Image 1 (spheres, rainbow, N blue to C red):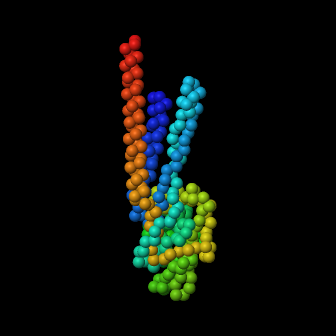
Image 2: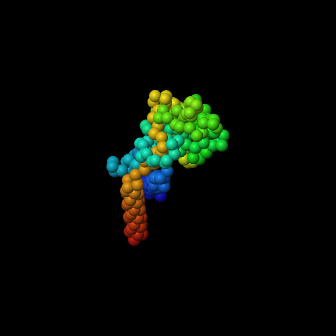
Image 3: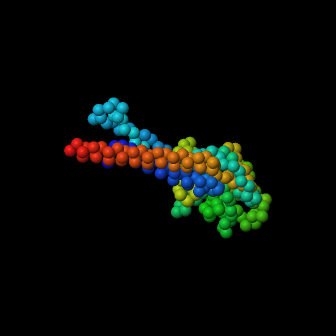
Amino acid sequence: MDVSSYVLLSQEQALKRRMDVVANNMANMSTAGFKRERPVFRDYVEEQPENAVDAAKRTAFVLDYGAAHDASAGAFQSTGNPLDVMIDGPGYLSVEAPGGGTAYTRAGFVRVNGAGELTTAGGQRILGEGGRPIAVPAEGMATLSVGKDGTVATADGAVGRIAVTVFADERGVTARGDGLMDAANGRELTAAETRLVTGGVEGSNVEPIAETTQMVEILRAYQTSMKLSQDMDDMRRRAIERLGKLG
């Protein structure tokens, strides 16, 4: 295989990766708290000093550097549950990850399990200040509420505060594949810095029209790449036929 074929192959692999990311975005357009992703690519330029033509001495390949998520906020979606919360601003809810450790989410579905602890819709315990679970006394269930600063209270007083954690570099926040995010070196916001909207959750920030447009662009780019590949194959075939006649 010559260099031109490798270049086209790297382009087609990048297009496949882009299509996978866009398809995942479309599949999660109704997922609460989902952040659309975009692939990150970089050109790798290889010098070819043996080429006689100066313009052909630089060969550019496409390298896949993974995907980065768009941290912009989604729209508020009312759920009718006064305990559900949407973070108004940056940050993530801290939850106890399956298997231990801490994970993060923007999907603010809040439930109370049999032990009186606040959990997500998936059953992960929601962590309060200092990484501690928030437990509600049985006698306070009827008057349970969540304040704008994350304070969880009953008629008898506060029982804890939902922690919101921010990260200086959003590129370090990565999807785990189970609806939660992994990240490190976060900072818990204080009560004065925390802003929660209750009674609903944050919707996905995926824009269906934009993603559909991207799908069409990717398809056209792939068709162009395939046409170039076919043209190069035809050119080689004709060259071989001519060389055969000369021989």
